[in-house]
Length: 252
Image (cartoon, rainbow, N blue to C red; front, side, top):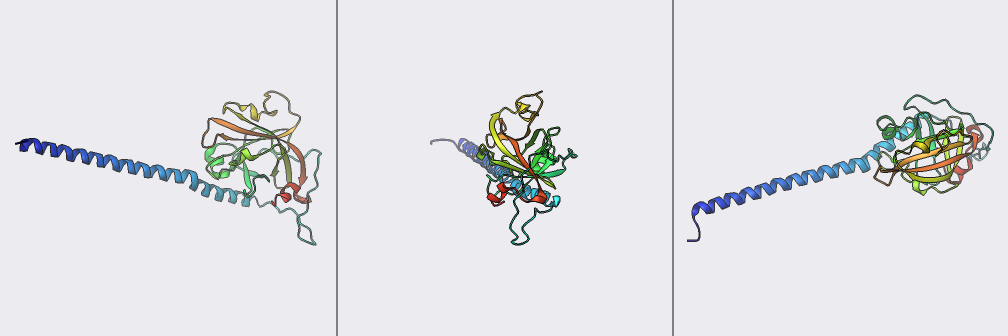
């Protein structure tokens, strides 16, 4: 005899238990995999779907009057640049949408709303671009500083690394266009808040220029650093005078 019935039965039960344990582990791994896949679909795709819809609704709710067109041909009228002191809005209440951003370099991107505040729950995740509390408003002397997601939630700053020196950044309020041009880019630590100072990079300095700063996470799918774009105001124009040539050249 090669063994006893008792030992064989014991080995059989042990093998069955082992196989059953492996089956449970396998099912748990499959379940976890499906949950992870579902989370990734939600994070990387569905938040964009919802974000784009909500941001489009925020832009539509502004009900801005369209810039004029030629009465003869219905062609857009080119706005007349102005270099005197522009009108400046008062800082609005939290989560109020007060302006839009268009970037001709980002062909195919929709008009993005700009709202007051930079917290995720009430601004960045639902309204797109957020204006840092206490920084300058569009057109004002100082630093008009804004933040936006680079991935997820419609990712309004997804293509920020494509920007080049001299590129226009067009901000619109109800009655005014503010056309900024990119002057520099940099990558900093999240703790470096000097980039949104009135004079970027020089805390405590008195501003003399009308600046803009875009901030977002870097690298992609990470928050270990911040990608920063700085610009200065090239000119402003009343919306009633037409559309900035930078938008017309880009088909905006």
